[in-house]
Image (cartoon, rainbow, N blue to C red; front, side):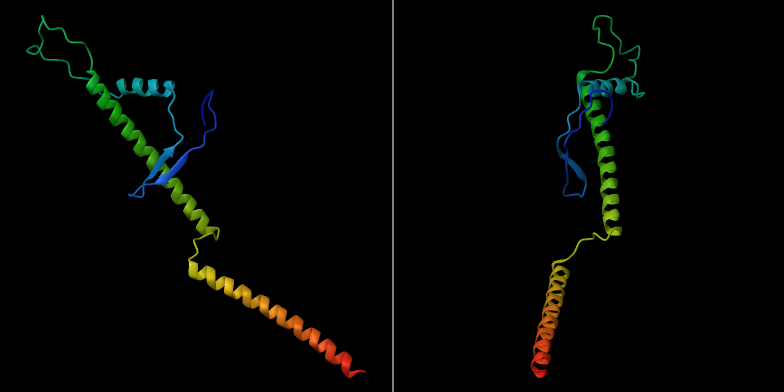
Length: 147
């Protein structure tokens, strides 16, 4: 799929009740991908506001940067954005495949159309059989009349 160490994976997709494509199984993010996602959060331009002078206290030192709850929330939002993009791409792909199959004559057939085609095929077979029977009878009649 991508960089070094990638392997082919079987991935199952399906449609949910909102007609959105969902990954059912087979996707697992590597530690490197997760680390890069975390690193990219810091460079998104979303930085905590520095506390004002009235909020600063010398006796209560606070760690610089966002809290773990804020980081988890930001990670969740980032994941949801990426998941939405993947969903959108998969939906486009599914649409293209449906269009391609329709153009290729592989459109979905209703049971009635399938049954009608089966009946037409049966009638063709019966007509062929009738022609061969008539030919056989005619050959017997012609050979009998020459005796």
